[in-house]
Amino acid sequence: MQTESVMAQPALGRDLLVSLRPKQWAKNSLVFLALLFSANERWSFSDVAGASLLIWQSLAAFVLFSIVASAQYLANDVIDADRDSHHPRKRHRPIASGRVSRSLALTVAAVLAVGGLAGSFALAPLFALLLAGYLSLMVAYSLSLKHVVIVDVFVIAAGFVLRATGGALAIAVPISPWLYLCTMLGALFLGFAKRRNELAVLRSGAAEHRRILDEYTDGFLDQMINVVAASTLIAYSFYTFSAPNLPSNHAMMLTIPFVLYGIFRYLYLIHVKGLGGSPEEVLFSDRPLVAGIVGWVAVSAAVLLVFRGT
Image (cartoon, rainbow, N blue to C red):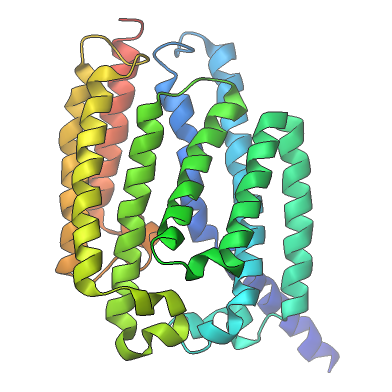
């Protein structure tokens, strides 16, 4: 019996780690947008001390967002455990399958939430307020807002905007409203694509797993995806040549093809490959898409650093 208990402890630890959804932490990389797009005005590689401080502050914001987000994931999995047990893939999650008890999950969630909020206050009080707002919004989503058609996806998109905003608050830099708009539209694009994939995978059992899927159809979702995709490209294009913190020679327009390719590639993955149910996995597992993201980051950084102050 003692041997079985000892053997079970590592398994429980692994299941808890899986329940924290470390793959989802990739979403929190949005906090680094403020660091990247402040390069033209606030820092450069020649300012080692200043750049190092901002980098460490951004890294701290990323870690704290990940901690609080994991607390929310645990709580959400407890709330959705019964429904997840009917999902072909999610039924294998540790909490839905019963490998991690609901009481333990809620206890760990509370510890992470308190610890994350306390740490964020030490980093920057405004960042702490935003993180508390993010956690409150996600809890409201888990309890009720995810059952309101269209609003459910808007709440998810708002979470992405809060990540980008949190990155700016953590290092005390202003960010162009265009960037917030682009983040919101991009998140809506991914959110509606996720709903479409869930509808396609679950079909007749879709409403059993997620009641809100009964309010969506393939055609309706395709229309919204197309509208948001076009709006994202237009908004980003305007951003590249109108944002005040970007080089005045409009060199940032060089990044537009990467955004256009990313949108087209994701649409291909949605409609041809039947993907999109897990955006974080698609964004970092599809090699052409990864190459496009890396290209966008590289060209953006080069433009902001080479044409710094112009």
